[in-house]
Structures are given as structure tokens and as C-alpha cells.
Length: 354
Image (cartoon, one colour):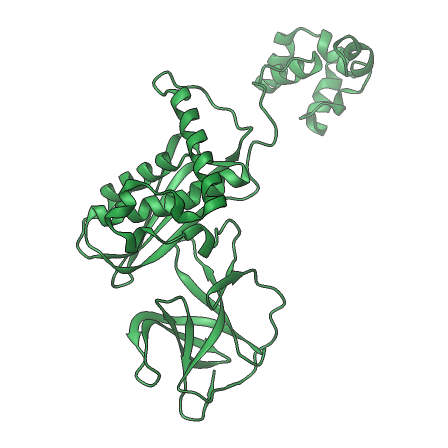
């Protein structure tokens, strides 16, 4: 509706068509002799406010077409809540420099995915797990939405330094960007932040993405990464999955979405150590929880409950990793998750795994 059409079209409508005019308000307006939007607009604002309070001024403004709320761009919020990556390290991390290397590795993956999807994050979150599987999660809201690798990494490292006292070595780190917004998101500029410098950093990150997409992850690395290549030369982005949705699954060494899971059936095991495909989901804290088990004949067994998780070795089948004590088909069974990202079940005599 154009400005010059407002009075001829809107003012003829009944007052009840205005937002916030319900039955009670309509009755009060009728008692005042106000039947149409035009009647309301032509009445002195102080009279309307005296009868209806603050809402009277709001309605009077609506009737006159006034709206002093700030103009905002539509579609500025991302359709997903967060993007993150975590990694269990090949050895215990025992100092800040070890953690800094891993944080930069993870931040590169998170920032790259943010850029590919056209998102920026306003909250940086980290999860830390020690070598006894105790974990904490910390987050902080940053002043500027970003998908710049160095900004995410520096914020994550700062949070780590404030949160970890090194009572125990670290075995797993996760970095996540949340409270996502799109490229259309507007925000107030900061006089103390160089937007020109941030623009250069964005272009540099995009150039790195392009080079790595053409020549591989190892074609371009930060000098920091060469301090410990065992920690840094792992392409997290290609071998792991971002978890923007609530549920993603890990199938042996690959990841896919859960679809059409069939009913539980008994699993007959014939070998002491049987590798299986497991559907699992990550919790908000970054813990990996198995949800179902896929046997080699195609049967799927639902895991109704995880009773206990601890680091242990399989005495029957051999192998060390996380031992999940689970309730499957109303019976207790152990599932092992090795450090090579494989799941296995140990044979209990000739009994079926349940």
C-alpha cells in the first residue's frame, strides 16, 4: 500500500482489523465513538492514551501508519544452529602448545565449512576431554560475527587457557561455531576494529580454501603445524563430518545420516573379534553415543541404553579403546570403539551378541 493510498484504503476499515485490537479493546473504542481506523487516527492521541494506556499510543500510531522500528534485512539467521569438529588425539596433550596446534587444525575446518555454507558464527564453543574421559564445555559470545579462521582459533584458545588447569592430560578437543547468521546479517561497525584488515583476512582464508581444494590439504600449512606433524597433518574437514543437525551417524570409518533402521534381531558371532558398523550420535557436549548396531548380514540392532563408558581392553578379542556397556534387546553387551575409528564386538562363547 502506497503512502497516498493509506487514508483512502485503510481508514475505511473497522478498528478491530488493527493488530492488538481484541474484543475488549474494540468495546472500549466503540464506547468512545471510534468505529473505524480513520476514527482512531483522527482522535487526539492523548485521549486514546488516557483510556487505553500505553497501548493506546501504539494503536494510534498504527492507525496513522507510523512505525519507528529500525529497518532490518530479512533472512539473516542461518537454518542450522552450529557447525563444529572434534578430534581424539593419537597421544595425550600435555601442554598449551599441543592444544594450540589442535585448536588451529579444528578451527580451520570449522571456518572453512562456515565459508562454504555462507554462514558466520557469533559464539565460539570448545569441549575438552581428559585421558579419563571427563569432559567440560565452555563457550563465549564474540563481538563480531565471523568465519575467519584466526579469529575463531584465537577465541577458542583463549577460552581454553581460562578454563583448563592441567590437572590431567587432554585427549580430545572440540571446536564449534554456533548462533549462526548468514552473510546478510547486519551489525554496528566498531571504530576499534579494522574492517579493512578483516576483509583481507577473509580473502586470504578463501585463497587457502581454493588452493587446498585443488592441490590437497597438505599443500599449504601454517608454520605452527610443523611443530608436531602427528597432531596437525590430519585433514579434519575431509575425514570428519560437521554436525549442524541434531543427529549424524558414524558407520565404522564413515559417516552418514540415519535412515530406515530396521527392528532388532539376534546377532550370531563366529569370530573372537568382529568389526561391526555402528550408528552413533554426538551429544551437545561432544560425547559419542551408539544408537544401533549393523551386523554383516544387514540386520540392525537398536541400542536402547548406554549404561557405562570407560577406557578398557578386550581380553577375549584384543584391542584397546572405549568400552560401551549397552542394553541391546533387553540384554547387556559390550561394544568397543578403537582409536582407529572402528567398532568391534567380542565373542562370548557361542552366545549371540545382544
